[in-house]
Image 1 (cartoon, each protein chain N blue to C red):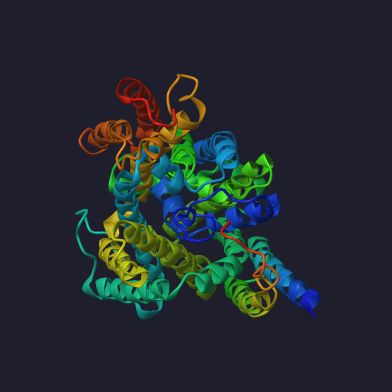
Image 2: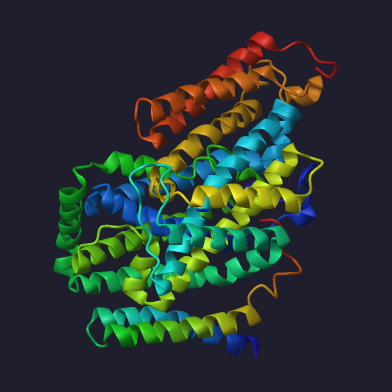
Length: 463
Length: 63
């Protein structure tokens, strides 16, 4: 999983992509293969095991969830992207108004910072291994790790923020070069972990005792948890909810020559969110078998399997994910504070991300965070969906803010915030699994937007 | 030249997987497997930047 798809600068930001700039499917397949084998996978895979997901549920649940995610990209995002060929932000501006998009950008930028913070934690966990600096997760959500680890997080954060402030293209090129290697490293981690656990025959692998023993050990130590089949399905489907249900990837697929490009995320899902997650989970299972250590420390896990190559992979995976995320958070902030420079806003984003990265528990709660991320940003995709497919059918004006000249479309504001507030209440106060809130919030947002538009729209000069 | 570099990159990736498989089958020790993986990684990062991206840089857009 990665956030490289959002607020990138570039061409045709306020106009449809012209025919001569369209791209064939190959570009999209390559891009998605790289973007979803990222530093976060080193955290998410072990968290499944730590949460008590059985191997059978994981294999089948991830399969179904990833298929649903690909179908969502293909049939929800791609038709609108090709129909309009506009960025998410420009489409939203035309529908919701400029001021509301600035508010959306601010929220988006802050969430980017927390995601980048998790990646800084991941990178620091690996950098610390050769120096004997331990990554430990304190009990409190906002508890700091060891002072030496906090210093390391600050150091890694400063470097990543400085590089991001310097520009994007070099990092993007390095990320492209590293992507195939990272995918292979994930595969190697899985193979080596199986060997370390003595699961070197088909009967031993299919029996899955190495996995169930690890879960038993974790649960005996940390208490019983459950992470069943449907929870896995929903998580795999919606962990990138902001990208597909939230329509952030309109900005990507607006360049697609053919709707068939919409199948491209399948390579990212099945390499990054299937093979890599399972392989990363096996790393923790092997660590538990070998040293009875249940800490999901990405650096230590990779070191245990592949030594220096593993350390390099975690550092590079974390860095290549954090860097563009901070860069894009900076762009999002700059969209809000238009008189500030991009460099200044990137450094602000880097500072927030570094502060977030200093709290190891935030990255340890990544399963919940990505669901919350989809719950907050996803519903805006419903606004775009309704505006594109339904407004005219109901005799309403599409792109109302553009036609009306308003800076805030009240129907969008209420339709977005109301379900999100309810969703956040259910997540943080009632304790529901965050990914469960994404689709109900999305549907509610679409319905409210349509109903409020019916009630509030006045004839425009162009209507 | 470019073809040779691509072959080196491919061989490097195959070597990483092969080292894991050899360890899996008990044919090499973990230390040997780690050494092969590290050498192959170094080869990948020397050879690949010399061809990947250069051919795309003129035509690549945001996507």
